[in-house]
Length: 294
Image 1 (cartoon, rainbow, N blue to C red):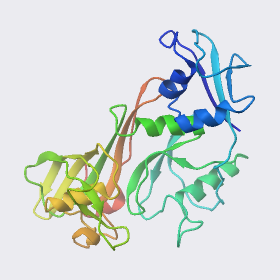
Image 2: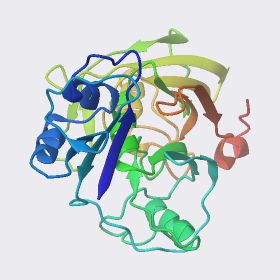
Image 3: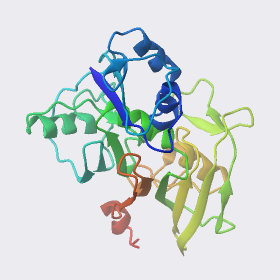
Image 4: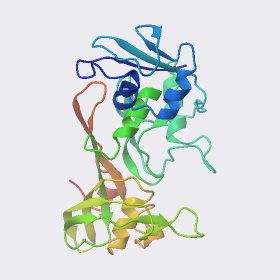
């Protein structure tokens, strides 16, 4: 059973239960409707209510849902670099080359499988709920939710000022101008699996970039995502003539074993602790081997 709960604040006084569930807990209409028809689905101070019920400060609102779609992963050995953990979330520094999810060719050698082992060694079971997702070849910071409630709330914060993600990339050429924004829509390449391109008919995408260092053999650039399209940074940088080193799929030089992209910094207004938090992941070794450093 999944539990979503909230103690009503002064600010929420007079709201309906549905407004609290949607605005403060970030729950979807579908989940609220599913709970409505359960005897213990939506409770206020332990008493079943309908979603039109008005609430008062200090009351305790609960929503209960069965664990229908959540499964625990098979555990597998492997190091996990956990930078932060509390009862709602954890922050992991993922190495490049490690897939996030099980899939074709990688059924038990993923970050999810390693985290399952990490928790089972503590006598716990993990339902793997990644919040921001990284490609197999991308290193750096990933947030994972430890509860269904925190997963939904954190995902609703993605691409807002409350949840900022900065990446570092090595580009084959220094961009001109050295600081700017690429806000060109992105769409799949027809007939090509897992390949994308800029396309006026695609989905809106925006990436800000700032050149931190420039050399004759490339540039170290900081990037901020405002949307979360697949391969967004890789496609946007290639579209301005500056593909990532190692990103041969989008025209980059094969200087590394994969695209030189690193999830460097995350700034988050923690939705449950109500405080500003920030984490950074040091530059990966393959960046340093090419002589780049911060």
